[in-house]
Length: 256
Image (cartoon, rainbow, N blue to C red; front, side, top):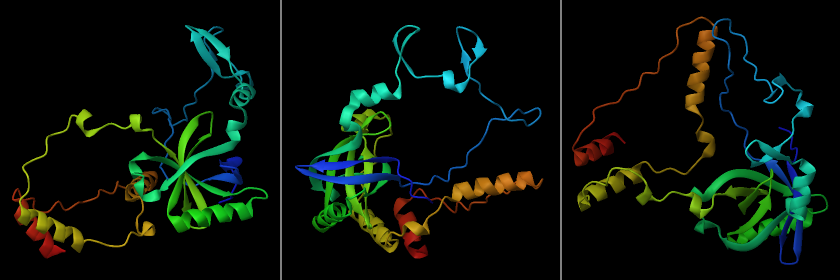
């Protein structure tokens, strides 16, 4: 896939500036559906209508507006947004560095790759290797797609990866959820047996070993229906379920 940059800017910390380019890190393979007319199978099109003139308007006449009062809008174009944000739109402002292992993955949102910007190859490599050697990640802020993000930058292979982050007040806490209470406290024998089962299933993580099996099944169903065949039905063996936790653990150990 072509390495076209989504955003060009600078990582800034202290008196140091490192030119960088932001690239997508994810190529989504989600199965996308379109709306079609059940009667004739034709594609459904959504058109732009002016609510005042009750007519369709061309795309070039559509702009963004912010509602200041009911049905009253202020038109805001890209130049207005860029002028308001100023240089912040091109700077990842690093506030501090932290131990990378201290960041719980629950705070990560989207991931992007950072590569060296024009004339910044040496500074980029120096920053990446210094962070990798010390196990550090950078915490900062940057503006992207008209929104300011808290972000973490960390070394990844030969580049840096930047994750947009969720703020702490955006996460729900366990006490706020309506979930069943935990059951009885397990005894030591059960804990030991469960720990042995966990260890027996331990492997080194290999990202390439995993793929979207659900997507494969959906695509098989779509292809079968397109060919006029019967839809494949996945048969899953649920096996015997036991209410005796210790017995279930022992049976799992025998099968592992």
